[in-house]
Length: 396
Image (cartoon, rainbow, N blue to C red; front, side):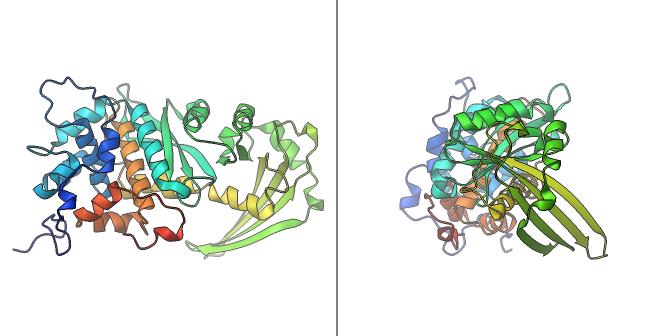
């Protein structure tokens, strides 16, 4: 009977050569620096081995701990040494117990720093979007949902790190915690209206960063002052038109880059008014007015640039939250033990970062291809620093 498509029976060109049989992969080496929370007695699998196999499994589309364990069980023995596997591969229970006890913040900090370094120019100097999401399938011991606050680069969509927040209302406190891990000098941070906070503006200014914040009615005084600016006298600085998903969206951007000091927001240099007009294929038209504020100067950002930054903030929804929820099945994964939900989310972020560094055209098609090619999985887990967007093409 022929092997199933998902089988790891080596196909032509997928047999390890002599060099691949010797030495563990780089991800294993990075994870081996972490402290193992388990009692040393009776430990059959190194912490680095379990976590590396978990990242590898996620990168091949495994959506649960059982699926990860099955992927590991199918791994040909010729590859065991690369993952640090000795007598047998870990069971689903082993993955579950370890993820429930590992320190998720240390795990995220270590893996985030490593993938950021591996991404090279793909993660440096690009704007950063921050936002939070709840893992709907996961629950804490008290029944509350696990809420995670993350940072990701615009354009290249490289996750930089995440921290846990008790609820969405606690995201404000998580803002500085996650960005403390990033060199903010010269970087632009985009955030939704929840994070249009004076303290955030001061924080970014102290660290040499910049902000582009949207302003809504949760900041009523600031919103009223922005709405009262003489927009009727300001020419439209940028127009864009986009078609897709059964609708046409027309956007205009107006910019005022000489602000009166009484606007009352720290370090603000410019204000923007963005008008979005959407028309569906059925002819239904909606109009939305959005205000934004930034500390960028007129020399650093024109109307087109501000429109691009506000639009680019959606990368965190489209290229992180949606991918984790739908493609990687995070919302359907009902982890409820200890730190496992947060740790598993970090492993998903790591897999996404590695896939994008490796030049994955789309996550869904690439994970399907990797499930049939172990050597390509090893290529993903042993990343080479990328320097340009074009250098990513054609690797997978």
